[in-house]
Length: 275
Image 1: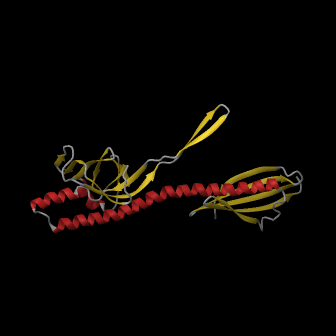
Image 2: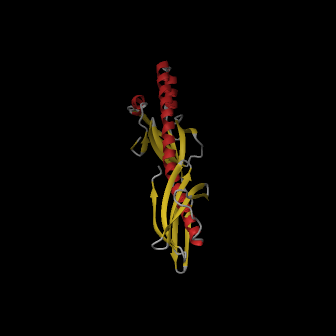
Image 3: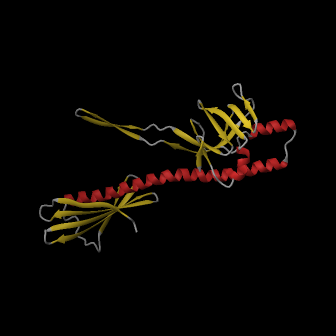
């Protein structure tokens, strides 16, 4: 998929057939107070569409073109309709704004996110073209079959585009959540060790394991301990594996604890690859 002229243009094997129509057929239409120009097969980001996924029609067509035949509406073209299919929607990321004042700290979460629908147009100007050809009495079977084949191929390819657009951002969010869950598990173990230096006495060959719930996610924590006789300190090894959906992240940390005073010192903490 590549961007052209402000629109998201789908590249697939259907382009071989669509290119014949894209070269000649386009429309300029209005919706939600904005104007959009689209060719057959374009993927267009449109705001403020109060519909769910499925077919959508726009009857405020300002202009349409077919080869050298370009018609301008006054202001709209009577009987012209742009037809498309809504694939899904996306939202902007939430923003956290920090306000620092004298002796006061507060933060505000700006939660409003504009909804943007991803519309994949598969039948642009077909209705107006069919109406004009019907008046001429020149509707042929080969033309109908060709257009039907184009619509089917573009609809299938558009489904794949919608799937990959939705799963790519979702996978990144799951990875962040899994990392946060793993860190929470490690921090939980450190708090328990700080409260009780004898929290775990298991060797690393048989670590002590327990779960930690982090909202809708979870972390599996493993803790083991060895004793450094020279410094009279406990060496704790902590491993936290965070789970969020299909994503997993692993955080490993080591801490030194004085066997007498219980003073804890973090030696290292890092993310490791899950084998």
